[in-house]
Amino acid sequence: MERRNLLKSIALGATVLPLASAFATPTKKKESTIQFSLNTSTLRGQKLDLPQMIEVAAKAGYDGIELWISEMETYIQSGKSLASLKKLFSDAKIIPVNAIGFAPWMAQDVAKSTAGFEQMEKEMGMLADIGCKRVAAPAIGATDPIDLLAAGEQYAKLIALGRKTGVMPQLEFWGAFDPFHQLGQALATAAAANDPDARILPDVYHLFRGGSGFEGLKLVNGNAIEVFHMNDFTSKPRLEQKDSDRVYPGDGIGPMKEIAETIKALGGHKFMSLELFNETYWAQDAQVVATTGLKKMKQFF
Image 1 (cartoon, rainbow, N blue to C red):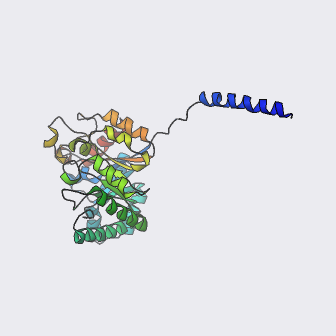
Image 2 (image 1 turned 90 degrees about the vertical axis):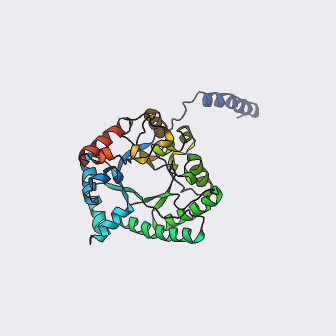
Image 3 (image 1 turned 45 degrees about the vertical axis):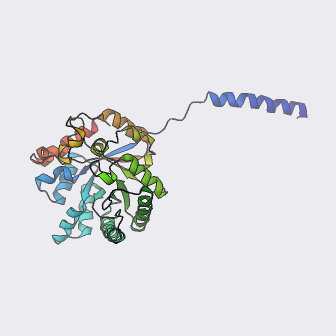
């Protein structure tokens, strides 16, 4: 090709390619993949043991369960093994999604924090034995004023422990817990950890009770949330609300449709986990409560 024709071809390409790019169809962001979990606190009042709650969750159609460490310990103390508990989950086709414990890992006091990390490592080891890959990490032990950068360093250390054990800590904030009650505090702590495995565990009730609101969720990368606690709240004044005031999603005044749309738009894989402490539900048949709760969640997804 003559030099003049070659230059002409290059110039034409430079003109056409940007136009083609400008009119290209934009890539659509993939929505979140949603599964549903039952936090066993929802059935606490019925006094069921862990095998019974697994059975209830399976019959209702849940994908998984969030158990409490204390329930797992009670199961072991009854003379049964973690291997048998793992088999119960497997046979029921129920995933042990996450576990709730209260180790004081975020304490500013070094001795208390050290004890908290030791407790976490022990509990993570137990969870690994049943195939549970996550553990909630609320800011137990933290006191006002909290240094969020220092908390980030502690969380980074906890994440490293999670990689060692195979059970990853999900940073949780509680709306009525003054030292660590805001989504912004959780995001700052997770950012300060500077770790790709940092995860936060939001909760509709805690977002409302702590005054975070729900717009801040739009700032979060979808992969940073793997478990989301689902519930709703009533018209009772915010600062007077208690855990026992939680109701089924859609039965309160929370913007559930908007929250669900935000969650779906984030992307990533998520477990929506029903977490209630409502004594009215505790007085009802466990199967009815579990089935109703799943239906109430699914209406938004």
